[in-house]
Image (cartoon, rainbow, N blue to C red; front, top):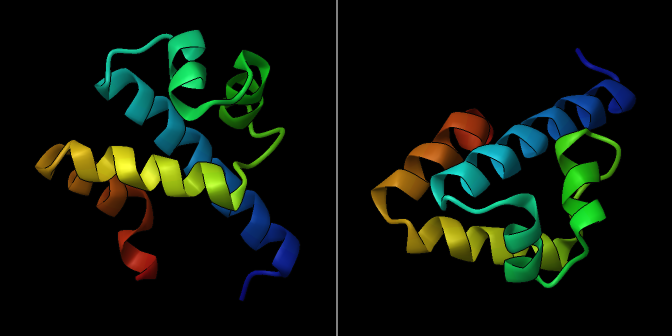
Length: 85
């Protein structure tokens, strides 16, 4: 059984990879992706480096982007969070 700190690290790792892969799937630079989510470039950089996690509002926007990608978005979501649902 993982401790809560271990769970947080695991979740941040998944989110950082999801953010990177979603950004690449959309063919957006970190700056353009930041603009799409209405956050600062440095925020995207921190998410991808696992120094911070997206807010619930940012996660909602990420979810919308995943849905807009259709099957490709579902694959990304399942890759990183499918086993938790």
